[in-house]
Length: 319
Image 1 (cartoon, helix red, strand yellow):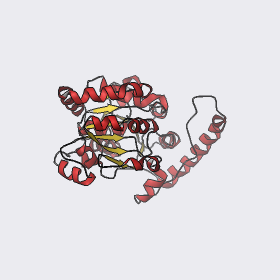
Image 2 (tube, rainbow, N blue to C red):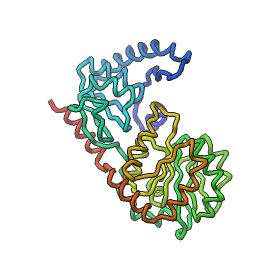
Image 3 (spheres, rainbow, N blue to C red):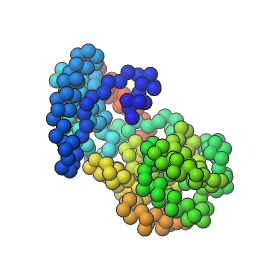
Image 4 (spheres, one colour):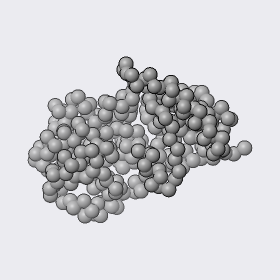
């Protein structure tokens, strides 16, 4: 995605021929040594040509060869671990970098404690205050101001299981007195766009997340690291349905880090068909629970994360 989005934002980007190791037996793993060697060689060329003052990694596969090359050239390095369970790349780099910015407490089990700075994850600055946008949000999405709204988020590409779950539950959600902002993802928009009606607004992608969050009374979401950080800032009752198909089951661990503090509800995907409707019904009928979830998730927000990370980068640039 970054190979498309970053040039659109006006910045130059260079890619590396790298990918992760498959966790099951796969012919793709046979190519990994060649990809790694190729990426290390190209990373050295990039470092020599660009002459960076600092190198930053966020845990993607491309971070490994690039930051390894930067560290070998005595360039100050910082990594940002977005998840509550550290990924392979950041664990591998941790001994070589100067600073490790984390989003969750207790990351000493993965990284050297003296390098860790708890900053949180960067979030959209337009989410810092959405409390006065409710009226604009209702108008923008064409909703009924007197009806509770459920916001469904499956990521920019979409989440098949969440989309199927919502599709099968439309009559139930209508009967429960809910209207929907349903972000189904670009892969699924053609399939689900026909479900749009007065109470269901289906979108491939949401350009105004500040308005979507403001309109929402209840949110159903995946549990990617940045999504969790945004939702902490938003402070609405959340039902997390983590994707089970990500490396090291990161999303479940992210969701657990919130739900274990009584700050969100966790619904495992394999249990969603059976438990989604009772969970939603119970949440709608329990205003005290709604309030408790909102208050507790808001306590986990780190609105100054971007600034705090920049401060750590500036420290590395100071002789």
